[in-house]
Length: 466
Ligand SMILES: Cc1ncc(COP(=O)(O)O)c(C=O)c1O
Image (cartoon, rainbow, N blue to C red; front, side, top):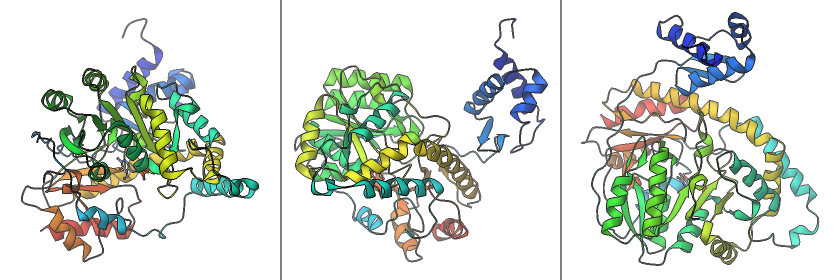
């Protein structure tokens, strides 16, 4: 440290040394910000800055209204292996298992029970906003909303985008029925039947279903469980085949929560320019990040090639069925397709959500929800640590799920039928690819609290595997 070392950095180093020397135990609470201010003669902002930097390094964790804690030591799993093979483009046939899981409302729960839990206070506030919007409705029930959707809601989306490096305005957005419809419109606008679309492997099965429906072909690009789509593999693919679009989730990709680093994002957009690609960014999990929300690809999109797709489904409510798309150079075509396929979205729902955001309810809700996700992820990692089966797993910093790799000989599709007989629904790995890979993998969600029933279901899985 020199004379010019900033004061937050002096504190950061002092605390780091104390943590590393074992002065505090794993999970122990640090002295309060007030005490640290007094002890080191620093302002509150300086202390908070140092603590936030330690949090970003994973050394401490902030817990709402309780202060900062030493990050609990948890079992470290090795990361699942990255696929390496690139198969030629192929037509898609999505497994019936996907239909079956959706029919059971079970994509994100081992024990689906839509009427199971009391809604958190944020959802009650959202419902009140929607109720008020419904009561305000006068003659509007006789009219369709404009195709792009409610102006105030789009304005709020634009304001939120600015925090993620993207200066959008309301006209850049079109409201959709969830992210799935946004992806559908994006693929329809950018591709024609027979075109090839690059996707991550493992990747989102909903996109595979869209590709099948639109009679496109897929080429699967190996994705790292930590850093997402392998851009060198994409480059090789683009040199071999004519690819029209690439669907990618740079921020907390499903199934394992990978985050694409900035240089890979930059390379992706350079490749897109060189090969005239549409880049369809599935950004649905971005807001779930508890150590920070990564920028969107739109922040570095200088040639309007990124079609940004997202929704409120993963962080607020899946039942709202409310999403959005910002289509870059394809935007007016997308708006036309929305009009053709849906005419308009529900006005009172949009107004209610816009009011919820404007009142600050959404931001407060997100803050709490991210903390519960982090806790639920930690609990899941701890429970998995007790499994008597060797496994590899991701340790995401956002998203709702872990990607778990089991020994080669385990077939999670067969396991699916066995667990179903006991009322437990798992998401088998083979769903995340079209080429028979990941058969020994599982996606496990931590979107719900680990109640006794869910914990028992999770503990039952290794017995069924055995
Ligand atoms: C990566 C990803 N994209 C899109 C969707 C669809 O989202 P929505 O419910 O908003 O249609 C999902 C839902 O599981 C998803 O996991």
